[in-house]
Amino acid sequence: MRPLKPFSTYGQPFLTIEATRPSHNSNDADKLQVGEEVWLGLASFHVLDPTGLRMLAWTQAPADEKAVFKAAKELLQASHGRASILSVTQDSEKLAKRKDELEKCCAAAEMTPDLGWAVKAKAGEMDTEVFKELQKESYELVIAQGSALDSPEHEQVLERVVMEFGVSLLLTVEIYQHISEILICTASGEPGKEDVYFGGRIARHTRSITTVLHVFDPERGEAARKRAERHLDKAKDLLNAFNVESVVKMEHGRFLPVLWNELKKKGYQLVVMGVPWKASGRHLEIASNLIKQTKASLLLVPAGRG
Image 1 (cartoon, rainbow, N blue to C red):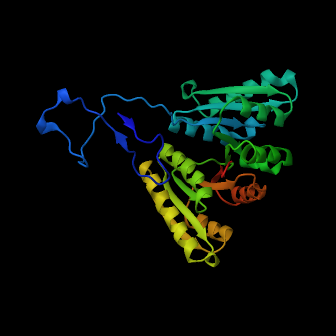
Image 2 (spheres, rainbow, N blue to C red; image 1 turned 120 degrees about the vertical axis):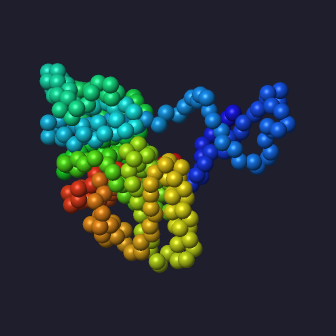
Image 3 (cartoon, rainbow, N blue to C red; image 1 turned 90 degrees about the vertical axis):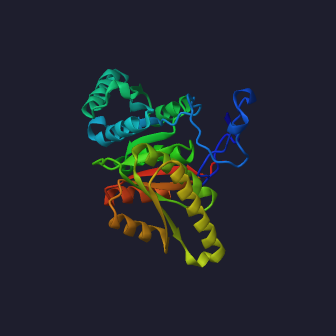
């Protein structure tokens, strides 16, 4: 038995499978007919593409950025993934102290060793060491505290994480909340697929109720509106395939006012936004304002790479 396609397409609610049955083990009464729907039980299976998240949690002030550890713990538990906890110091003599500080913060967050994490204290220039770590390991997600955006130096590092390395970035609020409701803000068409895919994975792992929001400008015309509706329908199908409880909605107007209004109406713990590949840093400016004015963490997903 094998899948007819290696991957399901965007919005495909099921996976087509080809199965063979030896003729000598069946009689005429048991033979299946073309198009017949049957229940298929698998005695054993092997997952070739593990779904656990590969994460890098980066903190330069471990004692003051406890939300980073709480977020890493929740996603490790939920996804059965792996995480590196990284901090960089320019003073090599302080490496042992920094590593000890990281381990104490992990213990304070009740991150038990069986969760699959390791601390990494590095000596050198902050940006160089972060980028070397990203090049060495195939991380899918970087976790940092949103207050890091207040530092121009840290902001430049995080901007390159998303826009140059193409790694999704989770910016946590200072008081981290368990994720149970997620808002995915999506564009229509190809750029909007990545945020639904990655946001859907987080929702599936955390078993979160999810709202997919598309903000439509009426001046774009009827054809664009229909494309947006098809995109939302496929987003709904994809989340159903992920076994995620979801609703989709289209609002008319400008993106930021609609977003603020939606956040006031519901208590989301996580907002997912796509960032166009090689885009300007305006998304980080929006992210900084959002984190300061709401209680929601923000997940930035690079879209349209290549």
